[in-house]
Image 1 (spheres, rainbow, N blue to C red):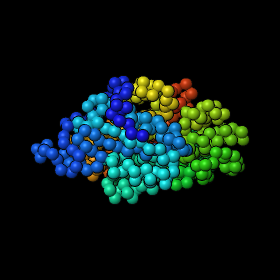
Image 2: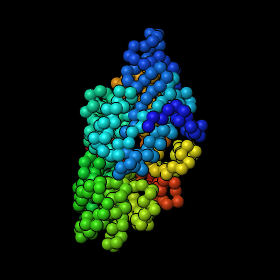
Image 3: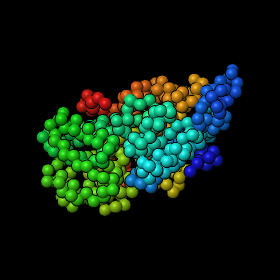
Image 4: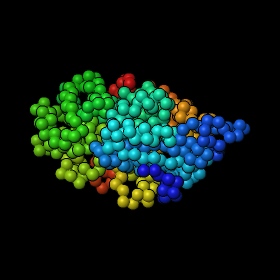
Length: 418
């Protein structure tokens, strides 16, 4: 699916969001030799005289379909606003969107198809997908904002992790449960997790927290295809756990809540962001999620009270009147704004090549989006933020989540190194 200028312009007038955007003048492009040596702009891939083309490789039909769909909508909202305001570097931004369905081979094939035409990727969703493409991204200096918060992907200049990494989110979330008296030193907690860079990376955080606080952690690995976790939760009940961390998909979170209720295991559930979908509120797990689920993320939820979140909510309702928003609308918008600011800086430096865009991003000072905490990408080896929100389920709020605890970093998180 290619979102053309006409499609991207729809509803853009509603998106009056104040961002620190650097104005770029129209310059000649399309090729690595400037048309006018007095107004030189270097370009290589994905940039013509009137267009910047970016890719979106997402999941619109697999385990993270709700995440992927709404994240792409957030990407679109931002670039709609920029195009309506004159574009970036005097050019409209077009998005080329592909649905990989959380399948690595499909994603690799789609990447090969779109790569010759895109400057970079504003969204690359899924840790297995990132691993499958990491070598090509690095070899060709292709800037890619990944929808994964694994610390395993730090240290690569082209690969951008926006927000707090999984281990720190888990450490901050468990700190909140400890501070609230919901867990205590000497307890045993469970951690249900996917294999690979998502679940196993998040598990690093819970194990670190356990070592620092005298809490035992029982790790339970589940596959993305597993939707009935009766055996796993029965195991955790036998271990007498006092909380369960979930680093998996929404279906696994729902099963943890439902099975726990049926077994009388009414303990807090702490989930990373990808583990919640507001569609779960239409399932039998709804009340258990309202009562017991805590979500730890570094970006504010849809329909939060900030001016930025309220503006995004208004624009989303006008552009997608039949949409089903999730927290990832805000994330998608904010990530696109970071990419937009990097493109502005690259334009100002006269180098809108792939390598020039990466250099511009890494050279930016702290970036404010109103959705994330202040972000710093200067050192590719470090997480761009270390703070987390704690969210609770709110059925009457669009997107289904509300802020319970504002951004904070626990003392234990401060001692954790990537």
